[in-house]
Length: 377
Image 1 (spheres, rainbow, N blue to C red):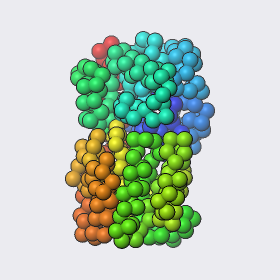
Image 2: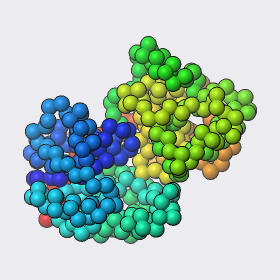
Image 3: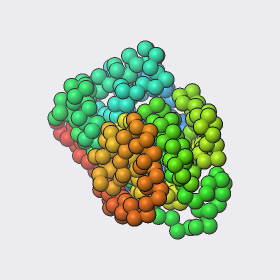
Image 4: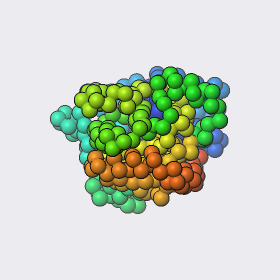
């Protein structure tokens, strides 16, 4: 088969969509030598692909398409570009796709977060209309829909009336480079670089509304007032347009306790996970929730919100809290940061839990979907 894959989120930054798309193609070209893959990427994605594959895979071809998501170019020029490749099918590895394309395709729906938490797009009626239109097109015209958790699958069926037989759940995986670190010298250099002291709670992710970071900071502040001597390290690209966390930290007089690192290079992430006392994930809505699994793989305990897919994905390997209750967040923070027995217990459970997830298995199950779609054509 000649299979197209839309990987326009493929880039060097460690967002969930980027990680999924990079691991998808990396593992597909490794396990599948029969089919030819045509991957659609931006110029930035093409550079990232070349860095990831110094020796270009024989079964992969790059096609550059730079028009942004929800653009007119995506809805017109992309169709012509796809059709010019003479594909047997295409996989849109995110919901964004040209809605008038009628060739056979598979689509991945990472989550329905924008339905519940539109964030800065709340009052942009055109963008919200476009999002709804694209999502409904994905459900109605795709051959198969891939959901990354059972929770997302249930939401697709309940909220969008997706046919249950069309939706296939395929879990994501955890990169093997996330593991306990032995290089203590390099670890200390990274901690010094960001002025981080030992005994800290770490968060990695975006500053979007559903990430619930203001309540996390308020809960951490309450724990500090109750005697907790620790730091909260927030990793991720700052976006004050969505939520001004530095202002909140200043208002709460927590500047010395809350550290913002900004965006980090991929190679530094395992070190900052490893040195943390625990990882915290206060999100209100997720499709899969990759960062807490990466933290578990590095051997640190995790505390997490008890909503969305989190209890499904993390199982019994995390301490849960009500993400809407600042005092409950504070309780969980104080407990995980002071209870060494609990830390050891969750660390052991976490290392066991992450073994359930594999990027190679994800690619194998996705390839099976491609074969099913082709055989039913």
